[in-house]
Length: 219
Image 1: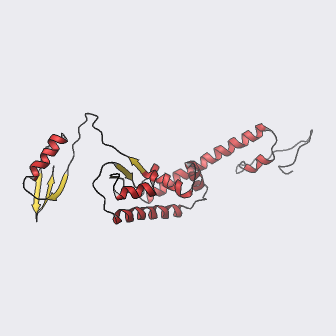
Image 2 (image 1 turned 30 degrees about the vertical axis):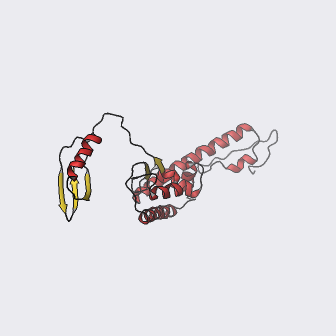
């Protein structure tokens, strides 16, 4: 008896269960009761969630093998590329082998090439207002007027996060600061004055070297 067979009053049927049998979305087209439809939808939802979880785990393992950090930005890049509204749709497609992992690997390679080309075309200015995170090279900080920042905002707005420096907090941190520039009289005094008075930084030590009118200072 086919599953689409309409039962009559008094009919007797024997249900054969199979471990590999899973609910099918087509069943919703011929079941009658709302209870049956509800159970089918719930089973389909649970099945999709499991396959999406498998897809996420698979993507995380492969990205680790490719030496690409697994991050929200990397996932959003993939989601935008494949035009999925929800991230679980991306994981589900990966988990059901509808998206080949080699395609994802090539996508990240091409993405890094595009960013590297953009940064080579225009030299970034020193800046601290806008930060942009690349998929595999950490966080870069640029000024809003920096050509690199303008390129990233126009091409990859979902990868850009506004950043500001804050004066709040009383925590202190030990850092190594290296300054390179042109050697000229009084330059060390001006740097230490700037750090001490303007930035309120307490200096522990200072080392400097000079060669061919170029200087390097390490604090």
